[in-house]
Image 1: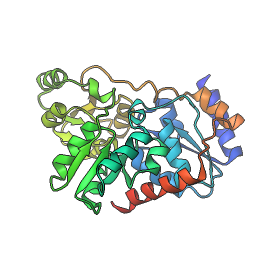
Image 2 (image 1 turned 180 degrees about the horizontal axis):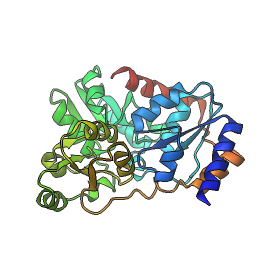
Image 3 (image 1 turned 90 degrees about the vertical axis):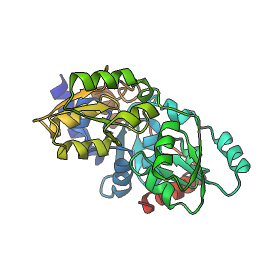
Image 4 (image 1 turned 45 degrees about the vertical axis):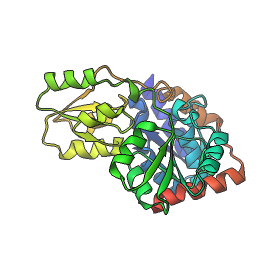
Length: 303
């Protein structure tokens, strides 16, 4: 059944002149059929570079598809799972950001790419987990309002102590599930392993891991690491790509596999239907896109 579906998707993709982008947390079969997989920064760059294709089908969550539309407004952008949201992104409301800007006049607003288009539109610059320290270091202000993930804010403040960060009280419910007990047990079971964790993890996890990295950073580290066993503290979808790229090494989740239900909403069936019907298109107001594009393009310029 899946082989037939895959053939149908590839045929539709060819007919529609579409490019399929997928996040590293997507289901294995979605990652395998995509033209490109990556983290938020890599996908933003790739979306901006799409020229020949008429359509971008984004296998991820809504803010990612919005980012693709903002950076390449001339393309039709489709989201196969229209209900794939991000609770972290929902923790930053545009009206609250506007109020914060009034409270801290002169502060630069750096918003994580895990935010809505509306929040990006009132931000000075965006960042991803892989480039957040570089972005904050380069903004022309000593005071930064950083939103919405407080754990990423903690990580950035450590890397850029010369800046004062006013950090939003938001969090990723997936990464917050990793515990120190998980980490301690991993050390006991695999004493020669390397532990890589995402900067959305709680501070005590970051402090006791070997490396704190974005998903793209984890993929790069895994290739050069001398460790034969690597423990991963991020959403379990990344394990598929890690194992494919490093078949000679073992990879385990830090504790029980942590799953983002929204990232798993995109299925082959939904991808096929989306291509076939060209539905679930991302539509944004021109003014919102224009302002948000400024913040996203600055993000790419700063690194």
